[in-house]
Length: 235
Ligand code: APR
Image (cartoon, rainbow, N blue to C red; front, side, top):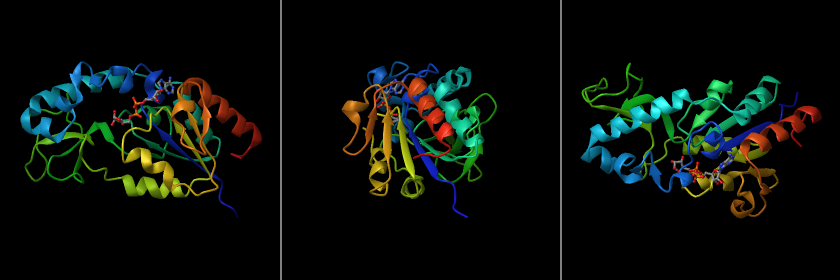
């Protein structure tokens, strides 16, 4: 029996914009008024771990208040309809999961989890009330947010490349494709696999061979999903 065609979706901060979470570019390189290098680099963690923890504790509250939007929900509904859907997200929020998607790979980690600061494989549930200085892992080192900071390697990159290479359709949503190595994922699709980018700036961002769908995630993703549901296939 033929396996059902596999949709791989690669999302960036644009898919959460309509849930009220600002994209990186819309923030002029500032996150909640902090320069990225003060809060999201290994150097910032060395210099001032309290500032880094405070920043992520605040962002966590904002993310908990946000709700999945029409794009997150449409992707989850497609999976519930029996389509095979894998999501690779650059986002550290949990909006795909809260919408109901079950196969989500977080390339840049998850803000709602903690990890050891000396071993990225040692992951922990978030302590109640957020991470504090003095919360340690089983090896006694300070806990930190389970997110990939600028300048760090991306541990799940190989797994994400594998998924992309197995796609029958690659749908890219709400990403400027500016941050490496995530953006290079697109080069791992099979040469004849269709690929589309849904983004209000898609015509300027789409690499050659990628269909540009110049609209928001909240409009573009449900429209595609409805078409696939009506057709009963991705192609
Ligand atoms: N629907 C879809 N796309 C949108 C919407 C929307 N409503 N609003 C904005 N966008 C698009 C923008 O046009 C832009 O192309 O979302 C994209 C956001 O781009 P970036 O801010 O560069 O975010 P992203 O590509 O996710 O950044 C990648 O960089 O900030 C770091 O590590 C962080 O994971 C992040 C990575």
